[in-house]
Image (tube, rainbow over all chains, first blue to last red; front, side):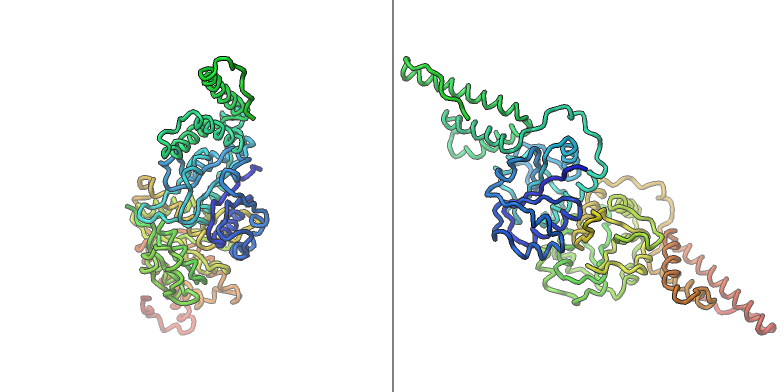
Length: 261
Length: 261
């Protein structure tokens, strides 16, 4: 039995949509629901009313303050968005994207699907925290897909693909990607050092530069060991630069800086 | 460009579900909606409100008094139901069922998907008017699939399959099945004659016997010409029997009966 993906709803507006999402999750064997800052708070009775008895995803739903926190323990997350070009991430149709989640799940990874708010969709900075984009192939003449319907399509594909899960693929011998929170600490570490180095210039470009960096690094699917190594790399580079700067300022001081937690 | 299937909602209860169905039809390129005896009448403003701008399937929706009328001009219709064993019809998952609709549409046939009411589902007599059953593979622990979500799954599969429509299959040289109303008149003709012959015995079994007959005949996908031929067969058999009975009752009378319209 594969562990199904976690469904993460970012800033959902309507309790009815949360309930409808829970219902269709239950239809297709998914159960773990996370809510990022639901507009009207949580819990909301109308969600249970519209779940038609699929109470358990709602009863167990966890609320997070932001997307990064909600993805903290997940190792492979795809973002549902109709605007895939904003991030340098692989783009899949639901069938292919879900097939990859099935494969990852078969290898024991914790996976997730991230859905944006009803009208606003996902912020690109949050998309950049995922490892890929899933785009539902809607008619360009009418793209406005209901949130719970997007969840339905993905859960339906999960039910089909997981029931026919292939044996682990050739990547199975690789170590798994680190959880999202480790990757996030890596990114923040890097960005802190780049800030200090004046890398983000002009300053108004910082958000997009950060997003692009995170997306690019995220595609690699670094393992926990690799994250640790890379943080050492960042520390080494930045402290080295610090020493150089310190030497330039005061040639007598040359002791190494304290390590980065 | 393939002509997409007509979506037929039998006795829909909630206007919100009609609107949600229209919306997801529009998302995936379907547009023709038919309603059989909507519970709260038609039109209903709440349907438009929940369609979020997908007005055209609602604006063009036609209302019918019963399923037979709604299928009258269609040549290949599949019924969505979770209880496929009631009729002797082929049962497909949505992907396979929709692939067959795509193939039929590529041959110029008029196709449809028939959905039952929110709680009651479809009556078996109405399922027997279709040529196959489509069952969404829901988790047996929570089968209660929202009507609009069932529509979504089928429309999604239509969008995928029609975008990658295969060339006409080997059956393409066959003449197309007759429209539903021709098949229905054939069934009714047959049943009338069988009633006259005392075939349906015991009488309480008549409904299930009728359903089984219709389903069995429906699977053949008779062409208009074949329907005509079969009606001639029925007429010939029944009038022949009539003559035999008449001869038994009154050996002098032997003129043939009037033909069946």
